[in-house]
Image (tube, rainbow, N blue to C red):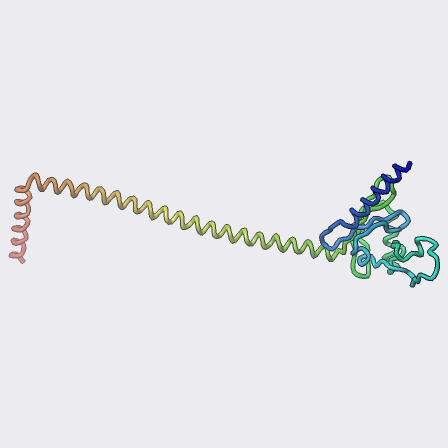
Length: 219
């Protein structure tokens, strides 16, 4: 029996630590709540979100008869706002897993799940405005990423255009080189022909000169 109690204590302590040390985004808070409304563990922000406090001023002037009179023990029935207190206690006793609850600081989204074999409820609490702000930030980040992506796409399209233009110029240069090579071949053939038939080229040249002189006389 003693070993069983020790094992239960270790499990309870680990559970308390996991609730207190839980890191949540969007200003959310976590709590472990007993069926009677006693808060067994909580993150620091829970007290602020739920407005937890004492219903009456308390002074250490006498023995503490029960947890109900101990200011260090937080309970849902110590929530300062009466309307919020009633909504939270009603939600605790319900089978709902999620509820939007009005509060003086704005609507709260409260989710709960039962811890097996204990009757305890694990709660997640977040201000609706904080959650929407987190969503808006994510939407803004997505928008900025989309803008960056479109800018990169435009840059890539511009680079592709430069590449295609350069490829077209290279093609034109290749055609010009081919034409030049062909012209050089023709010129080379002409040079070789002039070397082989110098007399014929001389006669053609002289004939051209005579024809030009004749035309000048008619002018």
